[in-house]
Amino acid sequence: MYVGHQRPTSGTTIVDVSDPSAPRHLATIEVPDGWHSHKVRVAGDVMVVNMERFGKSAPDQVGGGLRIYDVSRPRTPKLISAWDTMGGGVHRFDFDGRYAYISPTVQGYVGNIVMILDLIDPAKPTEVGRWWIPGQWTAGGEEYPWADWVPPRCHHPLRYGDRLYVSYWHHGFFILDISDMSKPTLVSHANTSPSFPHPTHTCLRFPQKLHGRDIMVVADEDVAKLWPAAPSFAWVYDITNERLPTPIATFQVPGLDTDGRPQPPMTGCHQPSERFVGTVVPFAWFAQGLRLVDFADPFRPREVGHYLPEPAPGADRPSSNDVTIDSRGLVYLVDRVNGVDIIETTAF
View 1 (tube, one colour):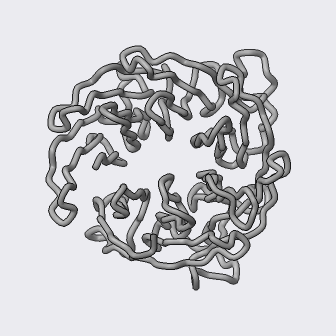
View 2 (cartoon, rainbow, N blue to C red):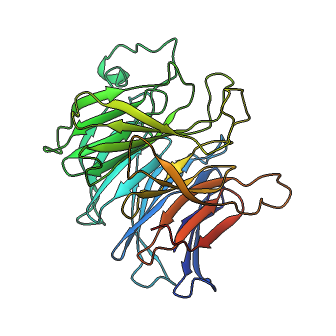
């Protein structure tokens, strides 16, 4: 198990979970104060972690971006290379064993953009292509049109086939054609933030058709609200006609304020697992813990299980931040400040 940590100087922890009831610490990689490595992906013997500015105290001599390690011996991870953005770093990303699909800050651009890196030689990461919303490249002379709106910020891309499904915070989501990776092109865009105040966090496409339709789940994150509001939730989009994404359903945790009253941030939705089995997707739902949601009928998603972890010492509620599963069907639920719960379920 490879765990990214929210707060410096904790960076990445490697844990042996061959016996999931008795996890054993193997190694920890620390980061400089002012930076965090809160996301991690592993394929084969290559581990990729992000390096992102955390607060305002990051030392200038340290660059944000990615750090790439050899973890063939998990007790002794070895740094292969450091890829720097010369800016605030990389927020979130995906890695398929060769390509990394990342959301870096890049000099000359406002906010995070989309970038694809080739890691076929992990010692020499190579940029393959990039994409941004027109207006972000101010150094290229583009006119910035969002003086009265939230600055654009790519949250992270997820790949399926020759498409990238890209969450873009308060600018909604974008579907990009990457059949030519050097020149990603726009397929379609949708944004609910003008009506609902929550930023778009994840765009998760189902690999199989559901009810004969191509389906994408879009999770809004319950932070950075544009105005006081009820907790965020997840949308279900029909993307059978990918040039016209159409919302067909929503999912909110049962009983979680259905009358629209404002509630504190981090009460509602955060992140769906990017790994899942069949039609059941695990979600980290901030104060509501783990929620298992079945999208077999995409017009009527339903909860089929949940688990509420203990709050961190001194806290009045949990803060479930990320979730994933392994090949055994075990669920790993990460709390922002209280470690990891390993959970088994019969829902898959």
